[in-house]
Length: 203
Image (tube, rainbow, N blue to C red; front, top):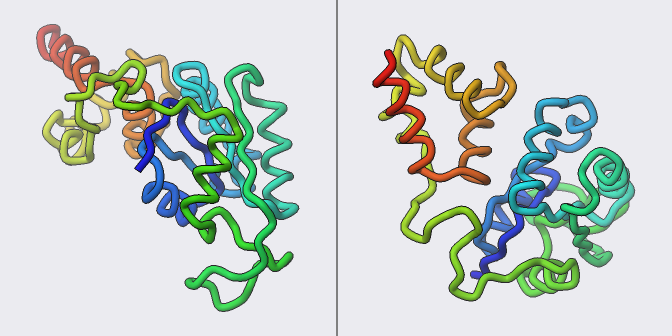
Protein backbone atom coordinates (compact mmCIF):
# COMPACT_ATOMS: atom_id res chain seq x y z
CA UNK A 1 0.00 0.00 0.00
CA UNK A 2 1.50 3.32 -1.08
CA UNK A 3 0.59 6.68 0.41
CA UNK A 4 0.30 9.83 -1.66
CA UNK A 5 -0.64 13.39 -0.79
CA UNK A 6 -2.98 14.16 -3.69
CA UNK A 7 -6.57 12.94 -3.88
CA UNK A 8 -7.39 10.79 -6.93
CA UNK A 9 -10.42 11.30 -9.18
CA UNK A 10 -11.74 8.27 -11.08
CA UNK A 11 -14.91 7.58 -13.07
CA UNK A 12 -16.88 5.17 -10.88
CA UNK A 13 -17.18 3.17 -7.69
CA UNK A 14 -15.52 0.03 -9.06
CA UNK A 15 -12.48 2.12 -9.92
CA UNK A 16 -12.47 3.36 -6.33
CA UNK A 17 -12.52 -0.23 -5.03
CA UNK A 18 -9.49 -1.10 -7.18
CA UNK A 19 -7.50 2.01 -6.18
CA UNK A 20 -8.24 1.53 -2.48
CA UNK A 21 -6.38 -1.80 -2.60
CA UNK A 22 -3.28 -0.08 -3.98
CA UNK A 23 -3.04 3.43 -2.59
CA UNK A 24 -3.75 5.13 0.72
CA UNK A 25 -5.38 8.45 -0.10
CA UNK A 26 -8.80 9.96 -0.75
CA UNK A 27 -10.34 8.53 -3.94
CA UNK A 28 -13.30 10.36 -5.49
CA UNK A 29 -15.56 9.60 -8.45
CA UNK A 30 -17.00 11.68 -11.27
CA UNK A 31 -20.06 9.48 -11.67
CA UNK A 32 -19.22 9.26 -15.36
CA UNK A 33 -20.83 11.93 -17.55
CA UNK A 34 -22.95 13.16 -14.60
CA UNK A 35 -20.01 15.41 -13.68
CA UNK A 36 -20.88 17.63 -16.68
CA UNK A 37 -24.04 18.85 -14.94
CA UNK A 38 -23.08 18.62 -11.25
CA UNK A 39 -21.98 22.13 -10.27
CA UNK A 40 -21.80 21.32 -6.58
CA UNK A 41 -19.56 18.33 -7.27
CA UNK A 42 -17.23 20.55 -9.29
CA UNK A 43 -17.05 23.11 -6.47
CA UNK A 44 -16.13 20.30 -4.10
CA UNK A 45 -13.40 19.02 -6.45
CA UNK A 46 -11.96 22.52 -6.88
CA UNK A 47 -11.65 22.97 -3.13
CA UNK A 48 -10.06 19.56 -2.66
CA UNK A 49 -7.65 20.31 -5.51
CA UNK A 50 -6.63 23.60 -3.91
CA UNK A 51 -6.16 21.98 -0.52
CA UNK A 52 -4.10 18.91 -1.43
CA UNK A 53 -3.88 18.52 -5.22
CA UNK A 54 -5.89 16.19 -7.43
CA UNK A 55 -4.82 13.43 -9.83
CA UNK A 56 -7.26 12.67 -12.67
CA UNK A 57 -7.24 8.96 -13.58
CA UNK A 58 -9.88 8.02 -16.16
CA UNK A 59 -10.18 4.99 -18.43
CA UNK A 60 -8.13 4.99 -21.65
CA UNK A 61 -11.20 4.81 -23.92
CA UNK A 62 -12.91 7.67 -25.74
CA UNK A 63 -15.41 8.31 -22.95
CA UNK A 64 -12.59 8.57 -20.42
CA UNK A 65 -10.87 11.22 -22.52
CA UNK A 66 -14.10 13.19 -22.97
CA UNK A 67 -14.40 13.39 -19.17
CA UNK A 68 -10.69 14.17 -18.75
CA UNK A 69 -10.74 16.97 -21.33
CA UNK A 70 -13.83 18.51 -19.73
CA UNK A 71 -12.16 18.49 -16.31
CA UNK A 72 -9.05 20.17 -17.73
CA UNK A 73 -11.22 23.17 -18.57
CA UNK A 74 -13.08 23.49 -15.27
CA UNK A 75 -10.52 22.57 -12.59
CA UNK A 76 -7.46 24.66 -11.58
CA UNK A 77 -4.70 23.49 -13.92
CA UNK A 78 -1.87 24.22 -11.51
CA UNK A 79 -3.42 21.89 -8.89
CA UNK A 80 -4.26 19.00 -11.25
CA UNK A 81 -2.06 16.13 -12.40
CA UNK A 82 -2.97 13.71 -15.18
CA UNK A 83 -2.40 9.95 -14.75
CA UNK A 84 -2.91 7.61 -17.71
CA UNK A 85 -3.39 3.86 -17.84
CA UNK A 86 -2.22 2.05 -21.01
CA UNK A 87 -4.47 0.39 -23.56
CA UNK A 88 -4.95 -3.16 -22.26
CA UNK A 89 -7.40 -5.33 -24.18
CA UNK A 90 -9.85 -7.52 -22.30
CA UNK A 91 -12.84 -7.32 -19.99
CA UNK A 92 -13.30 -7.02 -16.24
CA UNK A 93 -14.42 -10.19 -14.43
CA UNK A 94 -17.66 -8.65 -13.16
CA UNK A 95 -18.80 -7.68 -16.68
CA UNK A 96 -20.59 -9.99 -19.11
CA UNK A 97 -19.19 -8.16 -22.11
CA UNK A 98 -16.11 -6.12 -22.88
CA UNK A 99 -16.41 -2.34 -23.12
CA UNK A 100 -17.34 -0.70 -26.41
CA UNK A 101 -13.67 -0.34 -27.38
CA UNK A 102 -12.64 -3.66 -25.83
CA UNK A 103 -10.22 -2.07 -23.37
CA UNK A 104 -9.84 -2.65 -19.64
CA UNK A 105 -10.79 0.32 -17.48
CA UNK A 106 -9.02 1.50 -14.34
CA UNK A 107 -10.83 -1.19 -12.33
CA UNK A 108 -9.20 -3.93 -14.43
CA UNK A 109 -5.62 -2.71 -14.08
CA UNK A 110 -2.93 -4.56 -12.11
CA UNK A 111 -1.57 -2.77 -9.00
CA UNK A 112 1.89 -2.28 -10.56
CA UNK A 113 0.36 -0.57 -13.60
CA UNK A 114 -1.64 1.80 -11.39
CA UNK A 115 1.42 2.60 -9.25
CA UNK A 116 3.43 3.32 -12.37
CA UNK A 117 0.67 5.58 -13.75
CA UNK A 118 0.63 7.59 -10.50
CA UNK A 119 4.41 7.82 -10.42
CA UNK A 120 4.59 9.09 -14.00
CA UNK A 121 1.87 11.65 -13.21
CA UNK A 122 4.14 13.15 -10.54
CA UNK A 123 2.22 11.97 -7.48
CA UNK A 124 3.71 13.07 -4.15
CA UNK A 125 4.64 9.84 -2.38
CA UNK A 126 4.62 10.02 1.40
CA UNK A 127 7.28 7.80 2.94
CA UNK A 128 6.11 7.78 6.53
CA UNK A 129 5.13 11.45 6.31
CA UNK A 130 1.71 12.49 7.61
CA UNK A 131 -0.80 13.60 5.02
CA UNK A 132 -0.80 17.34 4.64
CA UNK A 133 -3.21 18.93 7.07
CA UNK A 134 -3.89 15.65 8.87
CA UNK A 135 -2.23 14.25 11.97
CA UNK A 136 -1.24 10.58 11.75
CA UNK A 137 -3.36 9.85 14.83
CA UNK A 138 -6.39 11.49 13.25
CA UNK A 139 -8.60 8.62 12.10
CA UNK A 140 -11.00 9.04 9.17
CA UNK A 141 -14.45 10.34 10.03
CA UNK A 142 -17.25 7.82 9.50
CA UNK A 143 -21.04 7.80 9.27
CA UNK A 144 -21.03 6.53 12.85
CA UNK A 145 -19.26 9.75 13.86
CA UNK A 146 -21.93 11.75 12.05
CA UNK A 147 -24.59 9.96 14.09
CA UNK A 148 -22.70 10.52 17.34
CA UNK A 149 -22.36 14.22 16.52
CA UNK A 150 -26.06 14.47 15.68
CA UNK A 151 -25.45 15.15 11.99
CA UNK A 152 -27.56 12.15 10.93
CA UNK A 153 -30.35 10.09 12.46
CA UNK A 154 -31.77 12.77 14.80
CA UNK A 155 -34.74 15.09 14.52
CA UNK A 156 -32.49 18.16 14.29
CA UNK A 157 -29.76 16.54 12.16
CA UNK A 158 -30.67 18.40 8.97
CA UNK A 159 -30.46 21.74 10.79
CA UNK A 160 -27.10 20.82 12.35
CA UNK A 161 -25.72 19.81 8.96
CA UNK A 162 -26.94 23.10 7.48
CA UNK A 163 -25.05 25.04 10.15
CA UNK A 164 -21.92 23.00 9.52
CA UNK A 165 -22.20 23.47 5.75
CA UNK A 166 -22.57 27.21 6.29
CA UNK A 167 -19.54 27.27 8.59
CA UNK A 168 -17.47 25.41 5.98
CA UNK A 169 -18.81 27.62 3.13
CA UNK A 170 -20.26 24.60 1.31
CA UNK A 171 -23.47 24.33 -0.79
CA UNK A 172 -26.62 24.20 1.36
CA UNK A 173 -28.08 21.13 -0.36
CA UNK A 174 -24.91 19.01 -0.20
CA UNK A 175 -25.76 15.47 0.94
CA UNK A 176 -24.43 13.95 4.15
CA UNK A 177 -22.30 11.55 2.08
CA UNK A 178 -20.75 14.39 0.08
CA UNK A 179 -20.05 16.31 3.29
CA UNK A 180 -18.36 13.26 4.79
CA UNK A 181 -16.24 12.87 1.67
CA UNK A 182 -15.20 16.53 1.73
CA UNK A 183 -14.24 16.52 5.41
CA UNK A 184 -12.12 13.40 5.03
CA UNK A 185 -10.36 14.95 2.04
CA UNK A 186 -9.40 18.33 3.46
CA UNK A 187 -10.47 18.55 7.11
CA UNK A 188 -9.65 16.90 10.41
CA UNK A 189 -11.66 15.35 13.22
CA UNK A 190 -10.41 18.05 15.60
CA UNK A 191 -11.62 20.87 13.34
CA UNK A 192 -15.11 19.46 13.01
CA UNK A 193 -15.40 18.68 16.72
CA UNK A 194 -14.33 22.24 17.52
CA UNK A 195 -17.02 23.68 15.20
CA UNK A 196 -19.71 21.43 16.68
CA UNK A 197 -18.60 22.31 20.22
CA UNK A 198 -18.96 25.98 19.31
CA UNK A 199 -22.52 25.24 18.10
CA UNK A 200 -23.37 23.62 21.44
CA UNK A 201 -21.95 26.50 23.46
CA UNK A 202 -23.98 29.03 21.47
CA UNK A 203 -27.19 27.04 21.29
